[in-house]
Length: 74
Image (cartoon, rainbow, N blue to C red):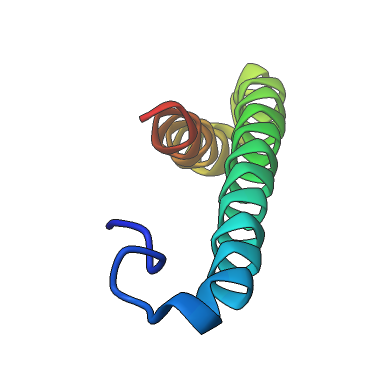
C-alpha cells in the first residue's frame, strides 16, 4: 500500500503526511504488540504443556503464539 501524498492535491499534503506518519507508527506498534503477545502465549503454552494434563490446551496455545510471532516478523 502506497503513500497518499502522491495522489493528494498540494494543499492537502500536510494532512496526508501526518496521516502517513500516524499509520506508520500504528503499524510499528501493532507489530511490537503482536510479537510480545506471541512470545507470551508461546511461553505460557510451553509451561502448560509441561503438565501432562494441560497438553490439550498448551500445544494449541504455543502454536498460536508461534503463528503470532511469525506474523509479527513478516
